[in-house]
Length: 340
Ligand SMILES: [Zn+2]
Picture (cartoon, rainbow, N blue to C red):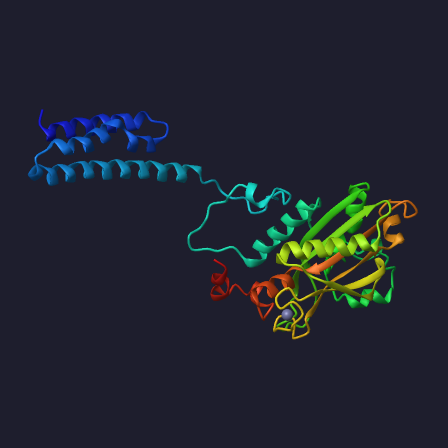
């Protein structure tokens, strides 16, 4: 049999075998192919180019058949994506099923950072919840120690529906539910969108993303709170940070603090991110008010806890030196493409 005939026979054999193979790529490792390549050595030098060309063509043809098959398979696997389906945000990022990656798209920076934040708190033992985007007066205010007519309600310029429902202005709208769903010890983080009737400018947007934490157990004190926030920030910025606090007022915590961290970008030397201050005020926090625990069905004589809230947008703006919060919702491709 001539070399040409041998190649023809082997081509037919391999094509027939390809149909049977479960893993089509195995055909590219077929011993017959190797034999064909090895046989080249026995040929006269002037026969080699034509022979080499023929077996290369065979290999290319087989590769194309394998690729065609894989394309058909991936098309068959595409299922309609139900965008309303909830996903479990407690599954670590690396273990989540990968949705189809779209060549021309990119992940929104808030989505990416949200997953990083959730993943750090997961590792610290916190369960992560989504927030709600429509809630009632009780969960937004009443359960959080803002009685009717309380002046602190005026600090929240909320959007309301005609039915009296509220687009929550903070993720604390979930706090009473967290307290009731879980009995102490409780460690939960809520991440979600909040809405405020703001005048828009580079630092204010009607929609913001907040990260809220709730921790309740016996003998919990403010030292635990501050150490938790420090640990989180050091994990997020991958550098050591210092913090300082000053007294603040929130109806749902007592005592309440403003938590400032040493600038993770300049380490207190002063830079554009921290406005040359060296410090960044980032987090409102405090010990959960006994009335709030009581309202959540937890005895404040037995348990104490802490809570905090900070803006995810702010965290991401600092990390990527984004100067205008409005870019996040703008849909500007030039902005989004930077995060490919
Ligand atoms: Zn700085």
